[in-house]
Structure formats: structure tokens, C-alpha cells
Image (cartoon, rainbow, N blue to C red; front, side, top):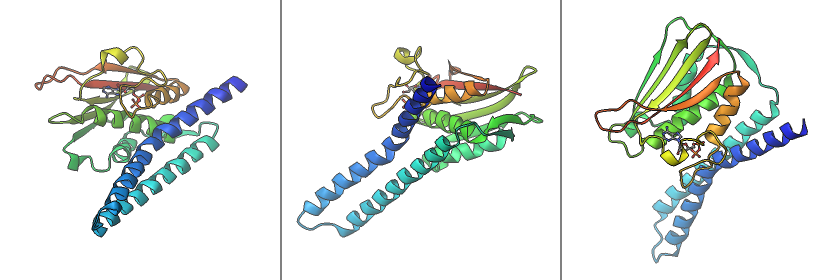
Length: 232
Ligand code: ADP
């Protein structure tokens, strides 16, 4: 029991660090910029005001993340109910990237008709979707025509299969074997916890998660497909 609790705490603190990294780096960058602006001979008030606005917004975001994560820890037992997964996808896309369309990313969602609801912890599965979508978007940051394809379909008698495909840089060889291990990352700012948390959640739901190279595309980029399946 103790070992389980220690593992859960380790995962929790890594998750917090992972989530907070981005707003904190942004706050640091804005603070540095403001310091430089104030030191100048004629400090540009408008720019400083704007940077302060961004700082406040990122600080609020960090606060929200902590509140959300706190809710996540307090709810120690998974809170499962019968849920349709399809409506959760649009929410996950906007959570992962509010400005998706304006960033030139084409997103398509295909959902098989008449899928039965799943017995899941909605918040946790939402977190898996957000993580996978965020990773896909990050992998496509250099892509000329970034395209995100999400599908939900029946997988045999007993499963539902969710796929998140991108046409980004593809999975780097050096990490392919450790994708789901904690702290495995190829990103400078990465924590390498996202996929590990995804796997923990999916396995707690008696499911399985894995990655595949994408189909070859005209642009030559194969991208990656992350899939998970959950029992009906
Ligand atoms: P992080 O995003 O902090 O690096 P993750 O556990 O979410 O942590 O991802 C681990 C690594 O898996 C990433 O650093 C990246 O190398 C690889 N990866 C994840 N998703 C994709 C993707 N869609 N395309 C290519 N590589 C990916």
C-alpha cells in the first residue's frame, strides 16, 4: 500500500511540474523583458502594460492548473460513470489548443455511429486526450500543412479504439522504445511524463495504449498515430 502511495505521489508531483512548466517559463520570460524595458531611457509604457497583462494571465493559468490537479488528487478513487467518448473529443481539442484553427491546423474527427457508452473516469480520459492532442500539435509545429485526425471506432466485439494521428516529425528513433517511460522526452522543455500518465490511466481502465508510425503522406512526413482502446 505504501509503495503504491509513494508511486502515486511521485507521479503527481511530476504531473504538476509538467503542467506548470509552461506558464512559469512564460512568466519568467515576460519578467525579464519588462526588466529590460524599464531600464531603457524612455520606458515604453504600452509594451510594459501588455507584458504585465500576459504575466497576470499566465499566473492565473498556473493557479487554475493547481486547482484542477488538486481536485484530481483529492478524488483518490477513480470516479467512473457511463459516458459517451465522442462529445469529449471536441472539448479536449479546445482544451489542448484554444486557437487551433487560427494556427492553420486542420482537424477532423470521425466517430463511428451507435457506439455504446463506456464506463470511464471522464476527467482522466479527458486528460489522456488532451495530452495526446498536445503532443500531436507540438510534433507538427514545423509542418507546412498540419493535420490532426482523430477517430473513434469499434474494435472487435469488446473494445472501442481511439486514434490520434498527426503528420508531424514522427517518433524519434532514440525514444521509440521508451515512449511511455517516465522522463523520456526529446523536448528541451519536456518532462516526459505525459505519455506515462496516459498509460497509467488507460491501464487503470483495463485498456491499452500504443504508438505507430503514420501512413506515408505526399509531403514525405509520416507523422505518428497514438491509439488507445478501452473495454465496452
Ligand atoms: P513530453 O511531451 O514532455 O516530452 P510525453 O511523455 O508526452 O512527454 O512524450 C514523450 C516523447 O514522446 C516526446 O518528447 C516525443 O519525443 C515523443 N512523442 C510524443 N508524442 C509524439 C508525436 N505525436 N509525434 C512524435 N513524437 C511524439
